[in-house]
Image (cartoon, rainbow, N blue to C red; front, top):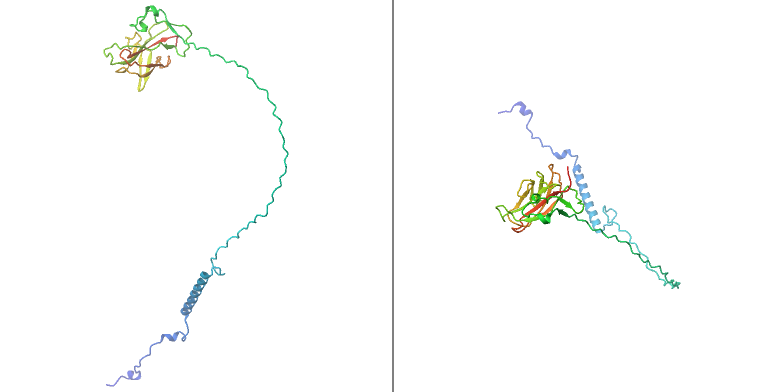
Length: 272
């Protein structure tokens, strides 16, 4: 069967493939090859410089040269010494010291301390009519206080010497207390005055006249249930709580015969 006129006029001839190397301008080096060569040369130069610096750190192109040590200072050596010649010195003999006059102290006057006057309370008729079974404010004619010397006190009340007696209530020896009474300038019992007793862990206030077994102005503070030695302070106060006596220090008795300590306050002058 015969071909068509179109096929006969354009016979199928194979087209040759394009060679990529034809656009490179012949067989010359391109840009990438040049850069590679430059890097190789630089690497060789750096390696060579490093080897030279290791072998001789003093080469001029070393970026980290060794530090220059400071120059040592040389001190001059000691020269010949000369022996000084001895120069005679003048010897001065001191004169003997002039004796000073000896000072003899004269006797000085030493004042002699005057004896301290201790006021003594004298109770009128005490030696003849005192009844030991009665309290002070119940003794007829014994309540007036006549001191032999002037009594110097900042308070209008003073206290007689503490005396001791046995407890007479039903507790007997199973008892320990501080008792007493308060009398005025004429020996009259003074009631409704506050008495404060303070001890170790103990503080209490009672009023005169609250325990009349020690007189019409009597008072009594129970401080224990057995006789023993304890320390207390006793002070008399007025109706407003102002102290009107000094502190009276009391030591309680240690036996059944003295387990009641008696403090008797006596007025020496009027007070407000």
